[in-house]
Image 1 (cartoon, rainbow, N blue to C red):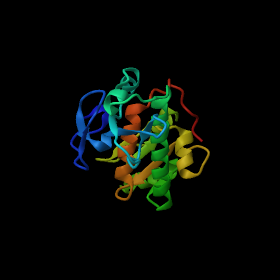
Image 2: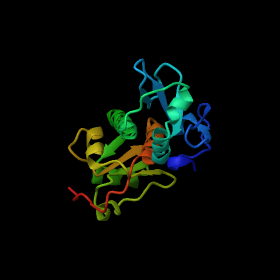
Image 3: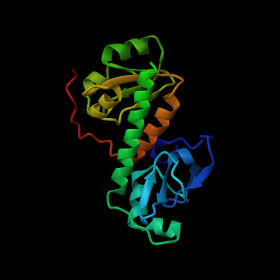
Image 4: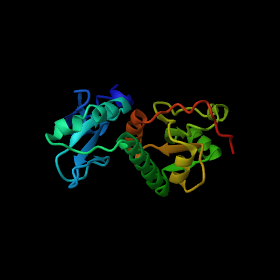
Length: 207
């Protein structure tokens, strides 16, 4: 496994070197950064912004090191401006990316939310990914199991899952195989590496 729980045997896309760790790995496990016209460093979570990029592993410690050690200036070979909340900004953008992908999956009929719908999907062995809110109660979450050979995502909040499904909050959700499931898992793994996932034991009441 690579940093942030990202498997290293992924074959999609070219490899890039992390400026903080020196590790070489597929681009999908890294965060790309570019320098704007104002000389400021911006995260390019989707990897589509123009210009030369610098890559950092999707790992909070690696990102923090890149900021504190001024590794972006070294990589871009020029003085650049880096905001103090850059790492938090990366986390916000990654969370937004996962939410948007889940929303698309919901609209295409590949994702469901709510305990009963999720349980039905799991019982029918139609689910590939089980998602549960990080701040949901442990007792409630323990009633559902990750699909056989499937994936588990448990580091999105109930509010974030709610945004993906057009509700105030969501505790349980499931994603069918195919469709956007692979992309959701990959983006969620990047988020996991950057996010502080300990909820302090504070669960949300089931509802």
